Length: 180
Image 1 (tube, rainbow, N blue to C red):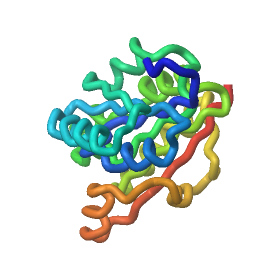
Image 2 (cartoon, rainbow, N blue to C red):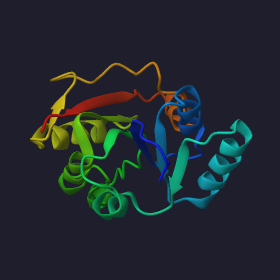
Image 3 (spheres, one colour):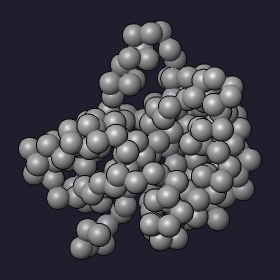
Image 4 (tube, rainbow, N blue to C red):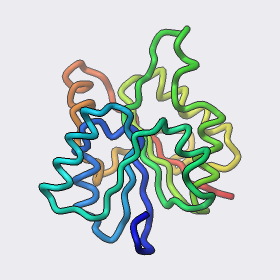
């Protein structure tokens, strides 16, 4: 896909793409795949990629579950990022949450041993749900067992995070390592 061998990072749901562009510009030695289904965000990211002259970014507009299940090879990724996914706060909608056992297993199968899964949310019940699902997956081990991870310095502040902070929401970061 990139015509070279380099560490591969996937960001699921990149929104307007500001964090993805900053990361790709700061790490030209890595290949970045962004997955987003909302066309307006894809358009903004394409403009930003062109303006920055980046060659290490590719975009998929398919559903993330489909991409992980059928479009990425086993053990092909070094890092997967999922920042501020829709928390689907109503109980009847919890089944729509992306972080579920089946999806986590698919992500684990695509990560290399030692690969990292990094997540963030400003919705406390979803943060607890994420941790419960990930702790139950034998392929992952928490980088900070029993607690949430510190905010990674390299994670740019996104508009979703700024909105959560304005609303007084606490941000929860999680980091898991692929063990097997």
